[in-house]
Length: 250
Ligand code: NAP
Image 1: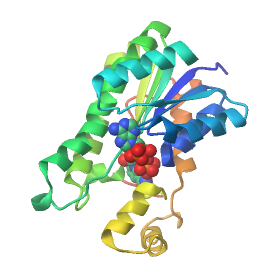
Image 2: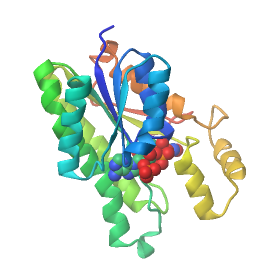
Image 3: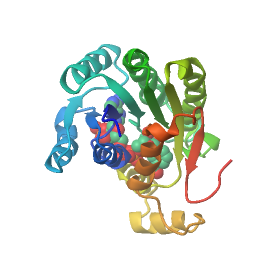
């Protein structure tokens, strides 16, 4: 297997951290990007302690200049990135009539603007290498979810963005696919439980009752799907949305 340079955004914790660790185990050098470099450092250090190659890079993915600088640093320190996982995300849930413009803009800014800026910066390296793997994090919320007008719009947008990347970049050996997780136990879902005032274990139990495989998702479930899309073997799979939700979604 060819060792490549991968970038995972929002990889200080949760799904991003598990995906960074998994890609490192697959033999790739991994740039662990997150808002604050010192928060990304722990993920990078775990990878290095396990015998892998990794660096931590602080970047706000919605900041154009910061994204350009971060991708240049990754290319200089680890080599040209040809795997990109757009995972950074935030929630600012509220019912539409109470949702502020700031909360709308913040969510679309991190998910959509962030994925756009990161992908635009990294694709030049992929085109030059005539190889690329782009994996975007969508969500089952793309199908609609009460209290998440901003997040659902962003996650549905990620799907259209992914399919367009697949069409535009395919001829350069680049694939683009989206993963739409269902309920995954992370700080993000913990924060949601706190916001609605339900103890996390009760929240997990209630969510699990709706999941056909009868267990909550864990970050490694998503990391495994990302590793497949990032693999050489997945070269004829592009523009797809994979629901990783313990059961069917449509
Ligand atoms: P998480 O634990 O909250 O981790 C998200 C990471 O993204 C955090 O480390 C966060 O940093 C970082 N981040 C936020 N804004 C950023 C920015 N502007 N630039 C760079 N990094 C930023 O979330 P998660 O549950 O692992 O979710 C990961 C992805 O999966 C997200 O896109 C999410 O929407 C999606 N997803 C999650 C679930 C689920 O059930 N957990 C389900 C469907 C989809 P800070 O901590 O500093 O804010």
